[in-house]
Image (cartoon, rainbow, N blue to C red):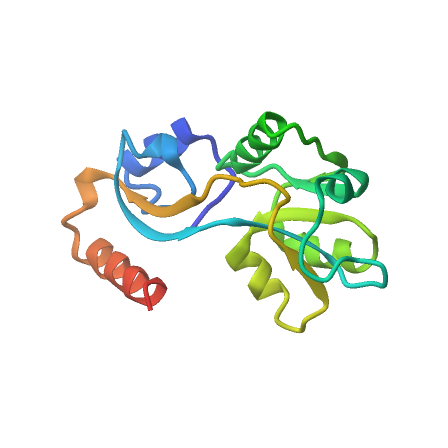
Length: 172
């Protein structure tokens, strides 16, 4: 599986049989590919646990005072987050932009910064209970993670097997 390609290139590579699947929050692919819902999720805010942090909720003021790590991913969810915050009258002070969530735990453990990320990802990263995880100070839209494939290959037995396996695994 490959990541970090533009949607047009992903669609073309899927059509040519060079790429079997695209997985993620990819609404622009829904009009050009076959797809299935894997799961729905919501956003959460995560930072390193430390004295002085609230126990359950962040205020809008606390959120805006913190420095943030922004994840600029192919699925453009970062744009959705920024637009939703702006519409709610909030702004993030971006200290660092990264291309994937995987690097954020190490960054957060060494700083007092915060990241806004999918709740499911935050729960995985916080398995050792090193982080404080909060709901955003304003309502952010929920999102869907989907698997996409090209219609030319939808009846392929290997393609069907993998989709079924993934759907069964993620829907448990």
